Image: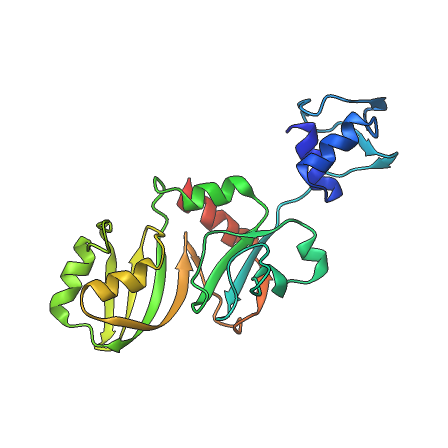
Length: 233
């Protein structure tokens, strides 16, 4: 790991702030001042900032049952974000949502500070499934399900194949492997239906903990993290 990245994560600084402190001589590695911001750390070195030992930042993985009315962003000047729902001790860890859910959508949202995992989970090559429960204000005829599953034009783009489990004329589950803007709503609109309520119930091998009320969250257990890693490997 680069020294500037290590210092930023361990001290709660931006990368730019970490570089400034390193160049100013405030960081030592194994007792010696280090000014090379890009120095590679093998692990196990004693790194200090202003004489204070720094520990390697650990990764945090949180499952949130996102409520409607907040946006999937780390900060927003006009809207409440999902990060605003977390306590200060977690917000200081530079967490971010993995992907997006519409502002009016609810359900499973993965929040972490593990950039490598997030990149893989969102990579089109990994085709990590996203499963949603839909409630519709216009019915979904049986003959439209096959059209949805094969892919539909949502305005200059044809979606990849998906899975649809119809519950009744006004509700269904749909599993997609993409994340285009308002994709699920646009897909249903393309076959003459309309989404009234959208809730994500699974993502990248992780299933929503139904005991979580909207707005609540918890850290993932080891088995859940391993299941995600197995899904996106």
